Image 1 (cartoon, rainbow, N blue to C red):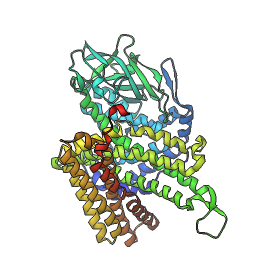
Image 2: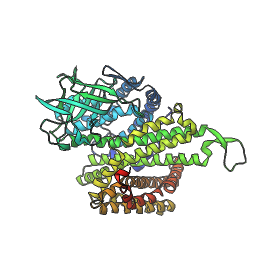
Image 3: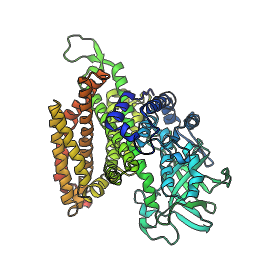
Image 4: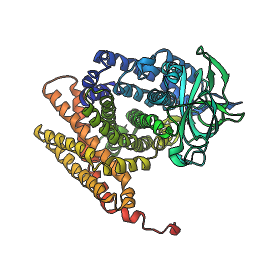
Length: 594
């Protein structure tokens, strides 16, 4: 696989749309400056292109091998991970108090995009580790933090998230794994967990599992779930590794994609009980785990956007090289590169415009998370927390659904060769499909958006964001970009109608509203993506007028924004019609008629 980090667009979004200078001015980020961020991006791009991307196909072909409870990763993965650790990449966003570098979410997001574009299967290991670090940092005792966080922050120990079980799926109220207290603050954990990413592997010295389980006297349902740290190897008083804990991988899932990532079925307590340590208070495990899950949801959104970038790069490279058929309207009978054919160009522009809109919205959301956690004023923290809460399901689900769409277009650009595995286009389609399922399916994200994030707060955050969209539309009109303003305003009207419908109807007609929740999420993604693209157009217009910077880049940005507003934004008209009028038909057919 050939991958080159899109550093020009990354820098543009970081600096012009996500507010890097404002983020680095927040408390705790005083040592971060544009020069440092540039150096980080350059070095990350080199590692992604030169080390991780060449292993993407290797991981897909070789997968992982399980023998006697030991998982061996694909050739080159272990060595690449050691280089990854030695260069400090795991600790980039880990807490500085425990040996990490404490970089802003915004900067870490740009770097993580490169890992995910170049080798999604590899990138899942540090993603889960960072999520586990966040859960332990926020909720565990000082003793557990001191034992586990330094090693996890440097990457020599990795982390996992053990939530679901064969009978539970997304309904964690059905979790049956048990935790029995044995004194001295320890518990014996027993049960089975499925879909555990990097639950067992050979890349790190130890694996720290975060496990949901029930105490003997726990209440039923989600209110009776506790969270435990269960290490693969016990940790001695001096910090060295001791005996193997009673936890093992009993099988590796045979998956549609991401073959380089071992997805494990984990068994706890087959020989008397795995030793675990309670995180925080009893029966609070699910709320604690949401710290990890929310971080992971944004991370999976980055994953979708990153795979879209990789699939787009692959398709563009093929379209430049593949020569077939004469150019439409030309008198020259000689065949030309297919990038000159209108329908191929339509597909490439769709891929490019969606990817750039996703990047802009995703970086903005991750910058908002920095503001929510680091802003010195409580009211500002509250405001930005609401923004992050509203944008998280959109970033997660809109990006990942688009990833499959964009990867599929990439296969189509390749034509018949796209269906042949050797070209590599199909791997992006296979790898991307899981991202819309990870950390809560699209339907779960959409219900979160319409229920908790829109109806429950009477649309306060939604309306505030849509007001910002309206302001950008006004600025576009004033800047002489009236066609962009008109398209954005039409979609804005559709979004406002949809928000009002959810607010007014959710309590009385929850099933009808739920039937349109995914279209609602898609509509909000398109409009808020258009908001960011509109902001990008304003900056590009200003830069061109001032003859400031790379004119070709800014011209391309304006053209891409125009395509987005003319070709993609009009889809909101059909989406709002479905939201307002389609709910009844979704539930109308009797169950027995299926």
